[in-house]
Amino acid sequence: MRTTMKHLLAIMTLLGSAAAAGASGLEVMVIANPSVKFSAVSSEELRAIFLVTRTSLADGSHVEPVVLTSGAVHQMFVRRFVGKSDAALETYYRSMVFTGRGLMPKAFGSDADVVNYVAKTRGAIGYVSTTASLAGVKTLEVK
Image: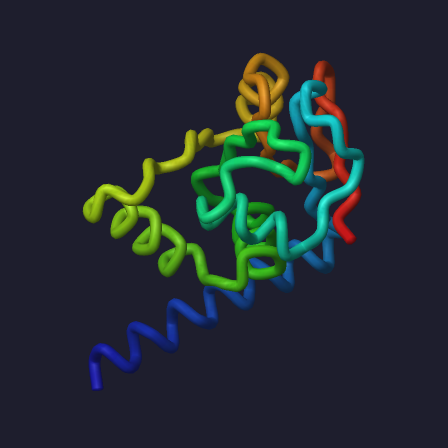
């Protein structure tokens, strides 16, 4: 019973965060290093990039996922484009590392840190809120 109550409280917290994000008009924007030749990416490609099952784009160029560590934008991105909860994605990444099939993506605590890393790192793709400053990066349309 206690575990069920904890799960219910966790779900209510997540729903509350998502509702607050939606009510505030908070949206997610996918960004990339200017070396990424594409201006659009399919939601399937984006999911594969962030699940680390795809490390290059159709033209053969290397891509590197960059994530936020937490927050409403992170939760919104993970649910919408990766199809997992934050906890499930963390578990997924840890299992990739444990089995030697991949590495944890670079993770940052703020939009500014994600933008800064993506701007400096060839092939980097990340996500930020639509209110973030985008100096040195380009935005990608998600189809």
